[in-house]
Image: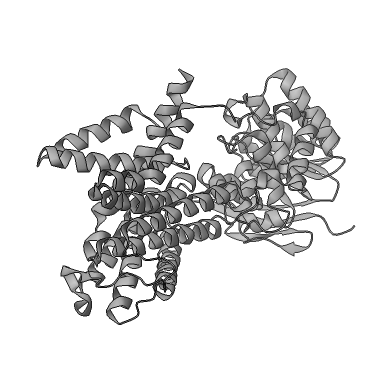
Length: 314
Length: 255
């Protein structure tokens, strides 16, 4: 268990790379890479949150991008109304995500399997259309965030490096939390429910309660990603809630390795870098990306983490 | 006579035109091992499912220790001291044997809304799991994934899981199903030990095992209890003989 493995080595390299990235960026004068990776880190955070319910909890939510929008709009709308303090914006983003998760989860968790996928998707699309209808906040066109969240001198989100490290710290904190959660009493129950719900009921665990709490925790984590995302792009629009974005998050999780701690981070890095790289090569990058993902999912069961694990065992 | 531990009264459950449980009444006294036997399709599993809360009856009642539990969900009954094993092994395959059993102990040891401390390092839960595994003779397999255990071993884990919840009443749905001769003998031996500690309702096809173990036997045919008594009475009962000789029509006419 404590032995050296390929997947551990690759993970450590990746994390070291993420930590040292601003250094490289400032030495090489490549500002673009820092901007790109800020986005990568934020979406990795969103993917990690999705992995908590999808990988560990077995709840295939196809509407996770809704939280990106909710977190983002909390920041954007408050900024628009003159509330610029991050100490208010971020808690509001988390609370709004929690409430959305509670309501959507309570309704969706009555269903299982394909129906669960469809109902979470449907709710996210509803959120998308609600956001599109917010005329005061830009409607379809979205909302420009003129001033980033203000943390009264504690940290300056306008500074690229500081903002990047804030995002990275959030990602690490969330992964640390997930690590604690999946090994806790609560986490074992949630994973037990993924494995065999009938058995868990029979030994005395009411399934829905635990799954709902897990659903809400995951939503709040993703809401945090949304609040960061709005600050990163200085803009929030209904597009971040669109179902294709939920699909992107799912692909990141599956690509990296469901139910692994660092798989979603790996997935986000690979997916977004591929997208960036291929779209520079050709306009039809999706034609290459699609089959590539298909191959990894087909032959790399367990995603990249699974592949690396098998590499080690030979 | 004192209040029975489990009392089933006039239980009825229909599936379409078929009455799978037809006015079943039975009492299980505390400390008793009560076997339920009957030919295939007699409605044994349907009956068990209503006792555990996986299926709602259409009428009648089930009470445990004097408390009506007819419509309580499965997890609440479990909290009241009712544990079950499944006819078809139902375990968490991607968990270790110890994890499977520890989770059952966890369900009965305080809240599981604890998010931070490592549950696998909780000594109380691990000890309970190891004790239950030891009880069924599988301590040496504690850290093996259940998916890697043999069928016989999984049947034993089923028992350990049920034991770990410290039940008042154990419902065993064909614990010998699919076991070889030696394994079956081991299971009978184990049940002989367990019955000293806990009341048991045993549904089983293995007749020698049933007659060796049971204090009382109820015979179910076409959803009805046609006879109930100690093993000697059941052995002598004409209706039961007919049912097991296959002449079930006679039995229904009598009923």
